Length: 436
Figure (cartoon, rainbow, N blue to C red):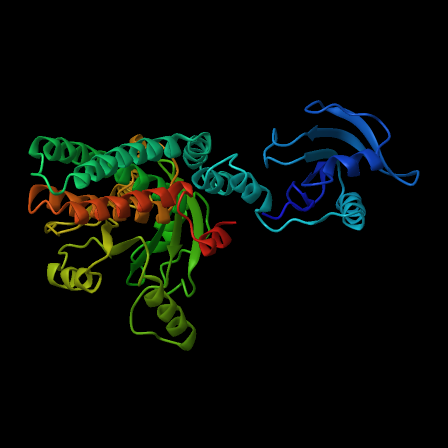
């Protein structure tokens, strides 16, 4: 592993009261001794002046850590000085002239992982915590960083290893008659692991959804109230609303939070036969926009008679997607509301009728459960868990059927390796490059 000295500005870009610079690696402590004459104690905050051949570079708080008792597991320095980018750049230039180099993105966390200070799921949780778009997401990321997800995975890994060991023991006596009582005990243990994996998959799906958020697109014919709904949910007049059809010619987006779930809401041009080139371009964008969102919200206008054939045809065009049907402008005289095979909500965008139900329905239809968020997860974690479950099911098929021990052992090995990918026990270099 590369242990050369790295440095980086740790605070966000821009001017601020406090600027933070970190150094990690061989020579970090020696370099600080060179730049400040004041002795410092490990793990204690010290007020220092940093000087280059007598010239003052900056003054502030310095904390030093002796490896392996640091975040990265290496000698590490953190200097908290003034947040002027010119001063920070001058310090970085000094460090680079004296043996350090600029850290690559995520390299401090990568070194913490490589030095066994954190596992891979915790390293990912750091990035997820930094980019969290809601309080619920930040709380879930903190739980993963604390190790809640990793602890769950480790317990499952330990039980899987026990099952593999028990199968190997039976294989050692392959020339003798199979011990059916022992096989039955192994089967029971694997079934319990499989059931627990299913629960963790559900939690991980929820954490992944919370991490990614959902894309919601409002669509429908012109003048159905899409822009009014958009403005009402955004709680500001982002979209122009008039009685003239076709006002919206470009997609508008706003980031919202609904029940803790980050939601990116888009308002699109009304879909109809275009009357001019600009509207045609807007409609083309709208059609592309509804191809792959998490949820499509189809708006129709309440009238004396809602045409079920027309609405069913539009729903048919959205087949395979998660759809919410909005019957808007419900203040009009609606005599009959047919039943449709999708979530249907009656609204009045001007009075706010039905909007609370819409805000509840969007997380629900996405599969998000705010009461089931135990930790933050990513799509790759869900994939690893689902592969683990498939291999477990294959092993159970063998345990219940022909009991070919070699095949059962192989399936359990694949299950164990798939699960180990989550925390980094089995990890390809290209995955590490992608994460860090």
